[in-house]
Amino acid sequence: MKINNRLKTIGDLVPLSSYPLDIGCDHALLSIYLVKEKNIPKAVASDNKSGPLKKAKENIKFYKVEDKVELIKAEGLDSYKEGIDTITISGMGGLNINRILEDNKKYLKNINTLILSPNNYSLAVKRKLVKLGYYIDNEVLVKENNIIYEIYVFKKGRKYYSYKKLFLGPVLSLKKDNIIKEYYRDLLETKKDILKVLPKSFVSKIRLTKKEIKILEKIIQNK
Image 1 (cartoon, rainbow, N blue to C red):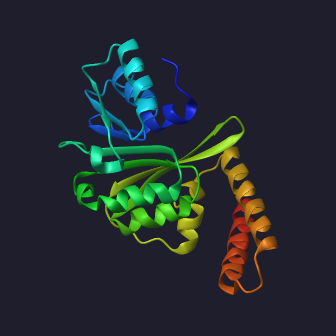
Image 2: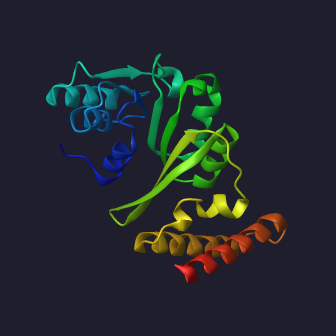
């Protein structure tokens, strides 16, 4: 089936024995991919908008997986069903992802794996998940249409990360790959641009940004 590289990569990271819920499913292609191509027995796809869910229903019928993919119209984790142990969220702002998880923390006790691909504020997402009792099991980068997307796999358990480790990515910083170097270079340029426009009164933010620039310059030299 046709699926973009970002969604395929997320799908390939989902544990094969899991019961996954895709929040903000759009057209449900990820859930369809999981049951059709990865042979996951059943999946739930949810969205809070009627338009995408209508298209999702059409896709589910087209791929003949009506008995395996359940569609739910709901906000965030309100779509949780008993037995779900894996959550995927992609194409959403990092702060929105954090809000979804924070608003329904009670369901997280049943969630062993979260696979998240935020559009921004990835550091805030990592910090939130660590606070909620998860560690970073894997970090993957995918380039599509000249945009590098970050994908994080969180597993239940506690680990301590220094600011530097969390900022760079504890798994990503150990990998050797051209896309990783490009990712760090792009992040370095972003941080330099931010530093240029920060008001002088933002003393702590300036100090932190300078620290991040030094961290990035050092790891780029070693990649």
